[in-house]
Image (cartoon, rainbow, N blue to C red; front, side, top):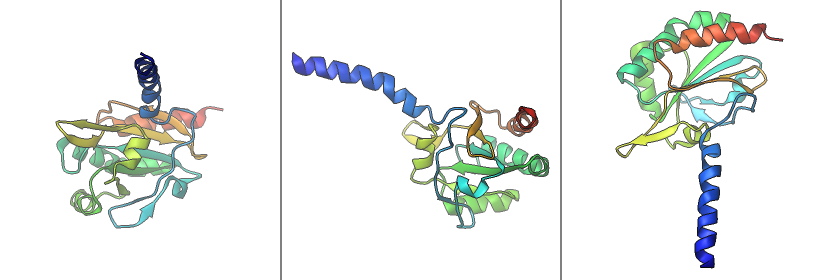
Length: 176
């Protein structure tokens, strides 16, 4: 009976605590750190962008229709984003080789990071799976120049995300 009571108590605790960890970082929190390789094999981390706004966007898979739309929209808006003081970095579970081919085909002018071991997607609370396949949910984190999460975009529309980020950058930069 005691075992059953302990098991139920632990199960209830896990039910309440697990979603907090799965949710990823929230607005106002320091962005979790990581170190991943980009499409050229260079190691990148959020610290590389300290002092700048960072658009860290997670996407499911290279060469899929929505992900291609999203990367091309950020590519097409890169001059406006940089003018607004922001750098852009994409992250998916694909490997460096896939990112290199994707970046070359679509002329991507920013890093695409390979999270092949799923650690960063897990830390940011965006790892999911369907029919046994793991991928990163389409989610964007806008990180301020001090390294704190300024905005989180969930259920992102690949065509509109870049414009949303640009509009919010103006608003956030104007705030005291």
